[in-house]
Length: 203
Image 1 (cartoon, rainbow, N blue to C red):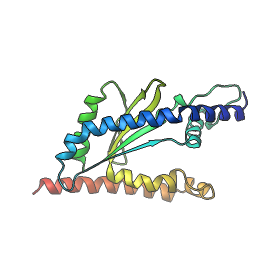
Image 2: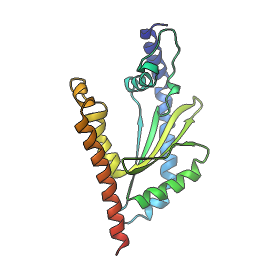
Image 3: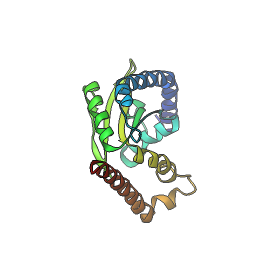
Image 4: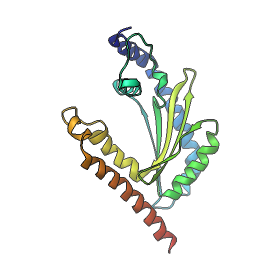
């Protein structure tokens, strides 16, 4: 199998999965919103929970799979499938402040206790991740719980730094300044959220 054939096969697989991916993700989103409803009703004015869903587009899914290969490219003669990805579809639950994030995670950790987890710190911010395959077609799914401050910044950073216009990609990827400033922003967002909660607790 040539590289071109591998990519064409992945595109065909994607379009066969497209309708099931959207169907299963809608069902998952409705389930998550139902479990969070009681918590949402109890939120104070400054507290926030937003649920966002997304299906990777075709070329993004193929590029993600390509980057995970040795040498960051496909090899002639090998078979590939989009089910090798962990996040073909995904939910992102944006929360503010940290206490709300912890409450959301308590609910999801019980609701999705059979899912795999990968919780870690990113730039001073806690991120909770859950992974599983959903539906009859075993579609790889990720659920993230992140700070709303982080998630909104990522909306900008993703297009500007992670997947920039190809004309600027070389300059962005090689910029130590942008890498340093990205880390500074993440740390400052974490500092802001911590200080905000400490201020409330001091009242």
